[in-house]
Structures are given as C-alpha cells and as structure tokens.
Length: 495
Image (tube, rainbow, N blue to C red; front, side):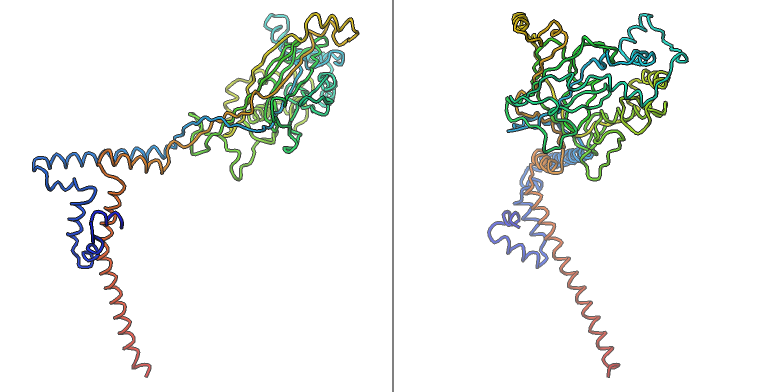
C-alpha cells in the first residue's frame, strides 16, 4: 500500500483504514481524485469550458491505448521473429569433415571389356548428354543385343574400377606432422562413387580432430589420374572438395568446390551457424523449420542416420526411383536389391533424367532449424616452377615428370580464424515487451504510469474490502446460529 500511502499524505494509512471501517468510501475517492497520479481526470479546478475538451482528450487517449494494446496482443499471437547476428570467439573448434572425390570415377585399365558395361557408364556420363545433343548418340538403345550383368556383379565391377585411397592420396599432413593417408582418411560411398573423408561419420565424437590455431592445417597431395580417365558423371578433370559436418553425408554431385590439377590450392574456411525458432514461429517466410532437437523427435529417413534437408531430398528421390524400378543404383544406400545393367539402362537412368524441381518440392522436405555451413576462400598457384621441375628430373626425382601438371593437386585446408558467425532467430515480441510497451503508451496517451494503475487497484480493493468483510461476518453469524439451533434440538433427544 506504499502507492496509496503516498497520495494520502501523513497519517494516510490510518485514515484510510478508518474510512474503510466506517464505510466512508467517498473520502477515499475524493483523496484519490485530488492527490493521485490521475488527478487531472477530475478537472475540479479548471475552467468549465475546458472540462469537455479534457474529457474528450482523455477518452480519445484511452481508446488509442486500447487499440495499441490490441494490436500488440494480436501481433504476439502471429509469432513474429527477429534475426540477431553475432560473432563467437573460440579457443578451439571441431575441424569439419573434408571429403575428396576424384572427378575421374573409374580407372580405364580396370574397367572390364564388357559391351553393356561400356554403354552403362557412357549413358550415365555428361558426355552422353553432349553426344545426344550433337546427334552422335542414339537416344534409344536396343538392349536385346547385350548380355546382362547382375546388380551384385555390377557393384563389384565399379568398385574395382574406382580409384583407391592409395591411388588418389599420395601424401597427408595434419598439424605439421606427416601421416599415412590411410590413418587420416576413410573411403566413403557417395552418389558419385567412392570418395575419401577426413574427420567423417565413422569417427567417434570425442576422437574428432580439432583446430586450435592456424597450424591446425590439413595438407593432402592428390593424384587425379587424368591420364587414365574414363566415362564419368562429369567431363571435368581434377577433384571435388566438400566441407561439411562430421555426422553428415556428402553429396558431390551438387555440393563442394572444384579444384583443377597442376595447382597448389589453399582453402581458408569460415563457419556459420544458423539457429531458427521452431513452430509456432515461422523460421522462413514460407514455412516452418524442422526441430530435430525436440524431445521425442524421430528421424523419418530410411537411408540416413540424421535428418537434414539434403538427406531428406535424396532419401525421397531415391525412394521414388526405386519404387518405380524395384531396385537401387549401385551407388545408392538402402535395403532394395541392386539393379542389373539392363534395369539401369531401361528404367532407372531414364526415370532419373526426368526428375525436376517439382519432384523435389513434392517431397516436402523442410529445412532443419539448426544448421552449420562452411565457406571457403580459395587461392591457387602453379604446383611448381619450370626450374623446379627440370631440376627434379636432373636429380632423378621421377615424381616430377611430364604428367605432373595434368594430375597433381597440392591441397591445404585450415580455418581462417577460430570464430563462428551465428545467425540466431529470437521472438520479436514477448509478454514482457508488451508490458514495457504498454507502460510507455500509458505515459504517452494518458500521462499515467504503472504507479497510477497500482493506486487504482489499491482503491478498488479497499472499496470491496468492507462489503466482503460484512458479507463474511453475516455468513459466519448465520452458520453459528444454525449450529446453535441444531444443538438445542438434539439436546432433549440425547437425554
């Protein structure tokens, strides 16, 4: 009752209690009107002609305050969000997974001389699209003249023909220490075939490599085998480098950076974390994000251990293709049997060529709320000068031969800085911000404050105190009377 005591003045508390006890409520209202924070609404000492004007202004301001409050509450239930960007400094960071894929999917000498295998690899390649467009390749293929190869045999053939880790990765260095590349990298099956991953899904979380300074650098000497190339999905020479989270699967067909052979390439990485608000907030203008960290969340995907938008899209498209052909591609994950060569040529490949953005949208895959992405600033230099190459040949270092510029990539990867750019969504409006806004609007519209409301609440409580007290006393008196009468009636019977 401090607010009420302030406008009652000295002895105010005793006066108000006496007024409540005696039922003199007019005194309370008079004191409140004369000395409270809202004393202007009484207009007792202003010119009579100003009183209507003041009343209109006060009523108009009260209406404006009400409209503002309604808009605030309505906006609150629309769940608006705001985006906050900040930079977090780290002493150490988990190094991302680094996946390296040779753009040459098959070593020519390892591909068996089987006609249907040649046709299969040709029709899946980018070169086939160019040849068809030029009229050099028939769009229809008569498979009756070919001997089929089973799916299981096909898997053995393509994996035998694929570049092996020791073929591709010649030298590996981590944090200035040299390692056997087999100790740092693992083969990983992707939609592009066999690639090689550092810090990948097979590594336990507590065993992941961490970056603690600019010396935390991965260096790899890669041999691309351009001189032994064959039909591949893309016609380019070099490698594809993908930077991703350790627990995510890479998708070389549409992710990563190309690095051409004959260069020393340096990739300076930066990390960006995005944290969106789950439903009922709209993380995006056109929809909600998928909260994979919610309690009880179950991953709906069949082929991937964790949910991401990319995983979901690939899982959906593969499921649709496999349902149509009743088999899976030799690079695909899943439980269905592998397609034979004829099944791939007659069904799987033609159906996959007809996929478009509508099929992706039909999958209905939402973006996960929390994402981690990596950017890279890439710089290049020639792998070696002419003098070094000539001197190496004179010294008998056969590594520097005439094929070097067409096959070698010297790749270095490190963090630009141990910082994380965080893009975080927060509620734009909360109940507390509404209270703060309404408090400011009260001062703007009515010249009032929270103290004024407190005074008014105190007055209302005091006004209802006496009637409640009288009603309570009356009820108790009636109950006591009924109890006494009951006891008197039961007393003779007990005797």
